[in-house]
Image (tube, one colour):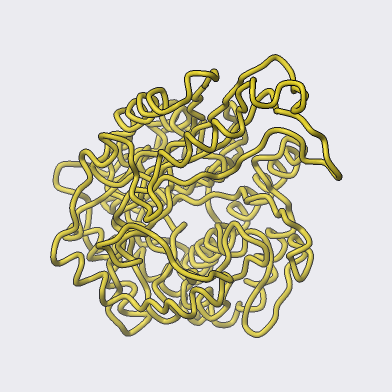
Length: 472
């Protein structure tokens, strides 16, 4: 009988083939015309879970895209872990910037290119392959495991909280593990202990019932595009400081130890500008780029439209103009209070000659943070140290994962965020890629993670949930 690590080593090519088959399904959750593909990806994943030996694999319907579930609950007296990932992916636009078709995986120079390679299909695959190694070589796992994969993470998880509420008994666990974050750099693993939250708005400015002739009414009628610009420039100053009164209320300041830890993280400004084609970095004064990205709130305009945008000229004053903007929030900001402050500020600064509507788009996440001295964090550190031979970094992340807050809050289970992709993986962008060395090391780390969590046992205040009759 071979050991699980040996099985993983022998199955490297098979593992890549499995991942590439998964990547070929264009499961773009934001595009209605891809709904059948999203569902096909869910079915494909359920088949993988069943194939590797997990039980009760099924596609569970929600009000939107489905959730995939499977479990293995045959370790009495051992803790139960809920493993989360998402199988939906971002749109691929602009398509002309891809060097190869986004849903035809391509290997080159130790990288695997394709949409979803890093976010998050690659990380789902490395976990199922580590689980397979355990079950194929030993016939068992060192703990009880429940696996879910969401199909709406890339659109803000609008139905995930309802799903968890409806299936709380089935999902109850001692701990949660999420692999939808990144490492610090190649060979330097990381555990993410905090995420920024997200609120998202559409701002619409209207002045007339239709577009107006700019010769007949120019200088008389208000211009919504101009008014929109005036509003937007009063949300944030040129240095990046948000001007909304009350916006920074509740922001948890960085401790001296956190700043020291962040300073240990490699940051190459020249390389970052080269990779992304930036002329310069930008942001709040008084904070390093890492601190701004991980621990400071932001307000960003995500899109502006309105008026004539076709070829040639059309001399009009547009009837309306609109913008979308979002705020990344940090512990301990209150999203409701921030939303109300934004509405008040926009109402105060908006020209009185136009009508302004602010719509908050649903499906966002609150900021999240967990104590770095929790035994679950220590278990993750041991697993990573064992595989990488170096001390894992404890980091925050600038992004948002709405499911983390939902699971931590509704299931009352601590969450471990450990990712195995590189920061320059181009997630959400053309030419998304997965570093294959990191993928294969990640499989080994996932293998050891279950041993280390099993070793910390069931929390003293909980008992391991017993399988329900429908799970036996």
